[in-house]
Image (cartoon, rainbow, N blue to C red; front, top):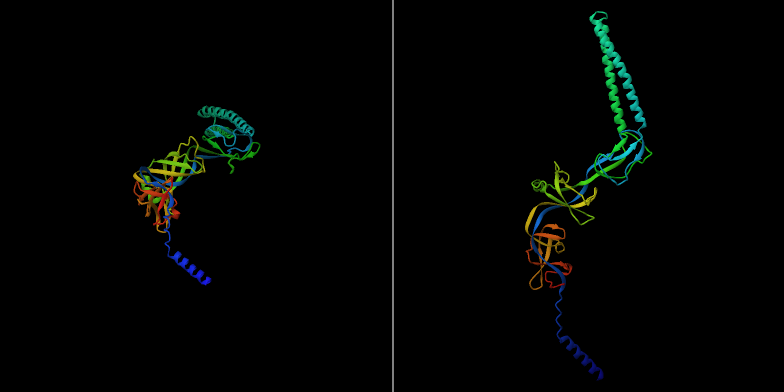
Length: 357
């Protein structure tokens, strides 16, 4: 009897538990960060990755052979046009110049004698004391002596030029690179190895490429403002568009452009990559949202928009351009709407959200 009583009691309790109403689960809300879409007047820009190039580059080579006796600069030093860079031993070329001057003095003496003989024979031929053939021989000798003197003078000028090549001066204002040949070494004229390379970095070029479809807009804005931001820094430099290539590259469908920057603060360095923004005009009343609000799915880009009841709507959008940390929305979002910027991974179109402070 006791066992039957216990079994009946257990069955009664079980039925009571099953018949009891389950409590309604709490309404879970997804915590999210939000921002309000804003409307602003923004510059219409083309963006690309560019490469900084020196305004001019000179590979300094010797034009005379000999021993390099002195280097007048330090590696990485700024130099100005006309500054002394190298000295080559001038003694062999000084001797060559002295020899050329001596040859001139000898040949000028012979010229004076030949001209004197020619003048004397001119008087004798009139009196028939000498034949005409003898007179013409004397005049030809004088002419040949004059030609020899002219050649001697040219040789002296060449010797002086070669001697001047012993002093190598900077042809431009710029900054020196690695010193490739040190004092004491022998150098050859027009050697393939440059003694040093000088880059002019004030101003500099930034070369970049744009798609050919945008060429018409760019040609209409020749001389437009260009900003270049080094990847290692945050301060953009401002320059002008100064070069549009004369042909589109058929392999890539792009065209090369160059902008010139004064670069007085030397924020741009040759060989450096920089983000380039070419301003083509203004974009009035542009709708912008934080770039992290834009998500990408199988059907393209979209943004979660917070509705009036703290729900969310998955809104397809068209992004016209990303500018720094902002996205310019061409279609899909209106100014004043609240968009989700963080927490999208937990959202569905039926989710409710809790806005984080």
